[in-house]
Structure formats: C-alpha cells, structure tokens
Image (tube, rainbow, N blue to C red; front, side):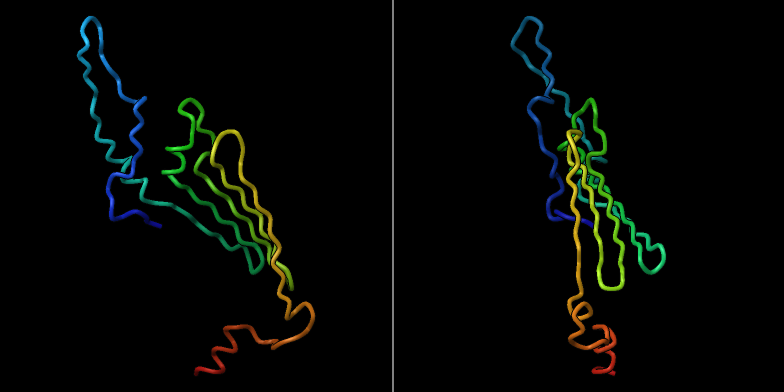
Length: 137
C-alpha cells in the first residue's frame, strides 16, 4: 500500500539530530544527508497474506514510517511489524492481531465474528456471492 504520494518528504526533522561543531566560536555547521531510501520507504506499507486451507489465514505486515518514528535508536525491537491470524469455523471466525509500535509492548486485538443468520437459522442459506450470481447472470 502506498500513502502520502502527493508529498515527497514526510520524514520528521528532529532538531536533536542536528550536529554542531563548536570549539571556540559560535559557528555551527550541520551535516545535510539526503535520506533518499528512508524518504522512499516511508510511503509504503508491505503486507503478505497466506491462506492455509479453507479455514486458516495468516498475514504479516511492515510499516517503515511507524518503525522509523516510534522505535528507539538503540533497540528497535519489532516496531513497525504486524501479525494477524484468522481461524474460520462453521458459524464463527476468530481473529488475533498483534501490532508492534514500540519496544515497550505490542498492541493486541482479539475478535469474534458471528454469522447470525447461520447461528439462529434465519435468512437465506445462500452466501452473498451465490445470491448475487443468481440475481445477475
């Protein structure tokens, strides 16, 4: 996925990154780096999804902007990475997701999706795709 394509430089300019060379005089010089690869990869989020049979899906993602802005320089850990597991049963789907923003810990989500029409037996037994195919040949 690509984002913020209308602006090339979405990098945060941290004033603490500026180096000044002061020995005797108040003259400061700062090094200017281009950071081309960093600026480029901040616009992209990479993800992959793998289906293991009909019922299990595993996906993982990497967000370079999140890693660059939220990680500690000395210990980056898993910042910027995300993992999702989905297990689909007959009437339920269990979701487990873990996003790493910082070395302090991960954001974990668990979810349960229930198909009420199948659980209580109301509504059509056809799926949405089958109903669409029957209605629009």
